[in-house]
Amino acid sequence: MELKKYERGDIIFLYILDCGNYKNHIKTHWVKFVPDFFLPRFKPSVLEEIIRDGDTVGKVVGINIKEFDYSNDNECQLFIDGIKKLKGPDDTNIYIEDSRKYPIEFLKKINELTELKFSSGYNIRILNLPILLRQVYKSLGREINCTDTLIISDERKIVLDIIKVLTEEINFFTVYGIEPTLKDEFYEEVLESTGISIFQPKKIDKVIKNYGTVINFSNKIDVDNFDFRNQSVIIDFSVEKPLKSMQKKKKNILYIQDIILESNLTSKWVSEYVNPELFVSINGIETTFSQIYTNNNFYFIDDYVRGFIKKKGII
Image 1 (spheres, rainbow, N blue to C red):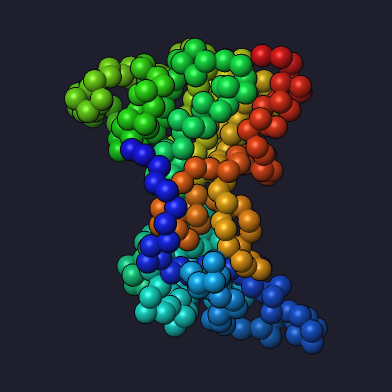
Image 2 (cartoon, rainbow, N blue to C red; image 1 turned 60 degrees about the horizontal axis):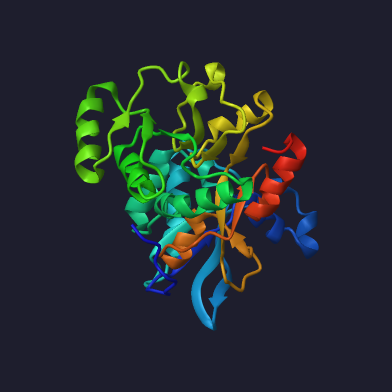
């Protein structure tokens, strides 16, 4: 798996504002004096065309000014109808601000009924792992393979893809999260695909201190009994970030929440740096990350690691 160079492709995407941002846009001038009670719940509208290098690559739209009940089929349909109303014949991708608050089944329904694709961002995160880890360990003044590596995920494809991109850097992996009845089959799959034998412990809390590098893609982790080793590097690419709370429990771990990429867009609404989901929605292609995201801030790796060393002491 290799990172592809930037190409435009045939991607036109819809960027849907969160209702709070849309309402703030609506409530200007005299409308700001109108009580929310009188505002409609749904008001599909195109707010901006998104430009890059003189070409239109997407549009920012608003659908709902107020929150709606995700369990109400009628309100869900009105939201989807709003998307379909604004969707152009060339639109292919969709990005919804704060989409994590929506039930996964509702997002699948949007995809099915609008034929617009969501991007998970998993591929671009995985493809950037070797570069990310090399830069982190270089800044720490340590070798990337100086410590054992733990991958946490219940999705076989994600684990296999991670191992494939890291085999040139690391030659031993522990995997936790695969369904117990599938462990033997998965062991053989990894061995056949990569030539690498993996270790799959029954209980992770007994061995967690063995690992200096932890890569997590799982939302379902009981961290109560976790006790990471000192100076661990934690890459938490899961959606719900269950390992984020470990920073309070273990002060001297280096925690990275996500990677950020440069959007290269001209837009009032889309920032200069965006998350992997939005970047792939814009580009449909992978590239190298620009910064990391953790604790609600963007950092260049050298700056983040220097701050970590200064705060926690030299590693």
